[in-house]
Every structure is written in C-alpha cells, then in structure tokens.
Length: 286
Image (cartoon, rainbow, N blue to C red; front, top):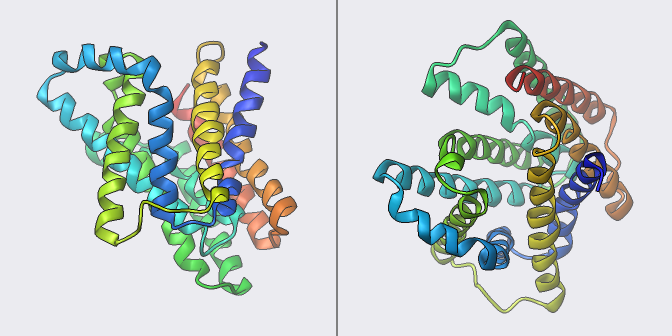
C-alpha cells in the first residue's frame, strides 16, 4: 500500500473517535475504560509474549516511567472524552490536539530543553486560537461549554505528559510490547477510577457495546497502528503535519452526524491552532 494512502486512512480512522464516543452514549469513564481495555485485549496475542520477555530486563526507573505513562494516558482519555459532553466536537478535538505545545512546555520545564523564537510564536498563536474557540463557546450557549474546553485542554496536557514520560521507553521495549504495557496500565487506572466514581462496568446497551468495540478497532488500533506504519515509510514532520487533518475530519463528521456547524470564531481559532501546531511539528521534528 502507498504510504500516502496509509497515512490518509490513519487520519480518517482517528477522526471517527469523537463521533463514536458521542454515539456510544455511555459515561465518559466507561467509554474510556472499554476503548483502551478492549484495544489492549485485541493486541495482546501479538504483544504479550515480547512484553513478558522484556519486563525483567527493565530497570526500576523504567518500570515507574511505564506506569506513569499509562496513568497519564488514562487521564487523557477520561478528560477528553468527558469534554465531549459539554462542548462541540470541533472545539474539543482542536483543543486536545494542542498536546504538542504542552509537550514543548513540559520539556522546557522538566528537561530544560530550549524554546526557539519560532516555537514561542507558535505558543502565542495557539493561545489566540484557544481564546477564540472559548469565546465562540461562551457566546454559543450549551450546557457548560467552557468546562468542556477546560477538560479538552486537560486532556491535551495529560497526553503530552504521556509522551514526555514515555520518552525513551520505545527503545527499551519493542513497539507492540510498549503499547501493550501502556494500554494495560491505562485500563487498570481507568478501572480504579470507575470504582471510585461509582460508575458501573455493566450492563450497557448493545449499541454502546458495539461502539466500544468500534472505538478500540478504528481510531485506537487502526488509527494509531497505521500512524506507526506510516512512520516507517515517511518522515516524522510529514506524518505530524498530515495528522493535523484530524480536527478537520472530526469537525466535518460532527457536522454531518450531529449538525454541529462551527461558527466564525471557532473557524478562526481553529485556523490559528492548526497554524501553531504546524510550526511546532516542523520545528520539533526537523
């Protein structure tokens, strides 16, 4: 298959994530748990053996990092999926895709990596874009749109934490084993959150269960799996820029499926956010 077709399919797959979440019509924690838990179960036949073989070779610090990475991923799914209950698909997906900017800030704070003037400009653009999206939500009504925006931003921060903590672990573990370990840890953390929040594990309507499986298969295994395949054939900047199509695809699907047509301020904010992400991706991966 052409690497460009692979990457296009990856973008299409991940764009369906927010749509399937809405259609699942289940508590956010339950959706998050089944999405990552089922994905971990489906990949297990291919990953469990290398994961178990490599586990004894990991240093204690690497094991802690792996656990922290999985917990951060659990928080990402929990907060971002919850955000879709309060704000539009366009706003939620655009804001959660600010994760690369949070990664820059975390790397600067934790690892003392310098921030270039170009990245500083991207951060300023992203702040303007996020402000425009929040203003659109504030004026557009809804149950609690600003709460949804804040949850999406929390999801972006958690995703970037997952990336920063997990840096280097892909060299310590084969890719499938790394994914298995992180997804299993995330599922365990989400199971604990379900218990603490009093959210039932079951029963859920057959329709919800069907969308749980679709979430595990399409945006999780299919989308992220195809992204990893694309990275073996195309450069990281190209893949990163192509993935900026996810907010566009998700917004289009939200309009088709739910009639959510973003207003002018959301479009302006989205353009600023995408421009900022493009600057960050090309700078960080150059």
